[in-house]
Amino acid sequence: MKALNRRLLTVLKATLKRGKSVLLLGPRQTGKTTLVRLLGEDLYLNFMDAQLRQNYERTPGALISEVKAIATRLSRKPLIILDEIQKIPDVMDAIQVLIDEGIAQFVITGSSARQLRNMLPGRVIKYQLSPLSLAELPTQELLPMLQNGSLPGIIFIENQSEIDDELRTYVSVYLEEEIRKEALVRNLGAFSRFLQLAASQSGKLVSFRALSQDVGIAHTTIAEYYRILEDCMIVERVDPITKSQSRSRLTKSSKYLFFDLGIRRLAAQEGLSPSQETYGHLFEQWVGLELNRFLRFKGSGNLRFWRDSSGPEVDWVIEIFGEYIPIEVKWTTKPTLKDCKHVITFLNEYKEAKKGFVVCRIPRPMQLTPEILAIPWEHLAEIINEK
Image 1 (cartoon, rainbow, N blue to C red):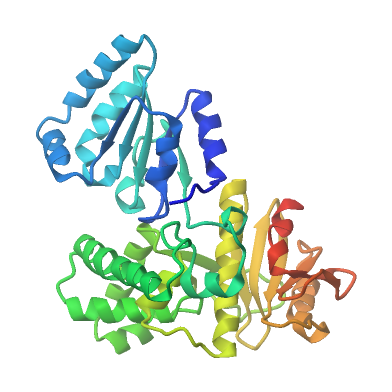
Image 2: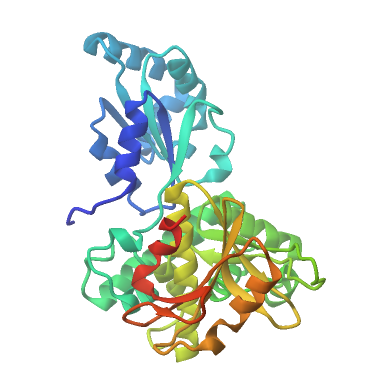
């Protein structure tokens, strides 16, 4: 596979240089292992290896004596990389001892925040790795990103059937088997049906009760399934803005975005010829995912949305440094004032909002009003970089 320039690499190196240890979270196949192996470790252990995992399950304290031996031989703190740590929580105590005694630095990876949420509090700096962002892609083509996503393992595959095979394997092996095990699912058919519906509902307002009727299980079980997908970073929850001086019917339900649009398509069992309306919805999701990635890399701000059940809604709102930045997403090549009418409503409603954007498919930025700028999707990062 060709080398990829992951922006997080510089951040990880700087964190290690400060003497800190790192916990790197991210869904499977987003490139965590490839990334951390660029840091030059003194010991690498991958707990996906069943035999290795069983050895440390029997004697988790062995890690302490092994790392101490490496530190003595090197006469310095070694860098220890532990991959997929959620597979063996028993070694957590050993890691804590080694960090607290200043014996070693660690880079730890995991694909389940559910099991790692309270791991080593105050002892590791947490980061999250997503599929390739716009700035990391070797080529920037919109339609392939909307259809196939941007997992590192598929972007250099040219044959569409091979891409679909890779994505289908991810859905069947990881989503349907691994996550099902974590959820202790007994009704396998219901879980598969839920997964398909959750993928097709990606980016839309979710009603747990409506889904429960479609799947045939309790709405509380639907909510738990979503929590598991969220903990495994398969979906990203986006909460609405619910405060307003004059509106009492603001939506309080959240949206859930599948972390990768290629995985979403295969999980939803959709083809490659969507309608223009569907392309518009996929475009909206892609913009939301990109904004979330930019915000995580920046280390500040939250992605929200705004919807009044009486009509007005804004696709995405960035909440950062006490301000709101409303963003409307349109699948148009000729934006007009009509495309930004809800952004205008939002700017009039919230004094915390000074300017807004319409993201669309134009070659160059266009000023729609003194406060609202239409920008090409390729310029999306500029919304964040201005803050």
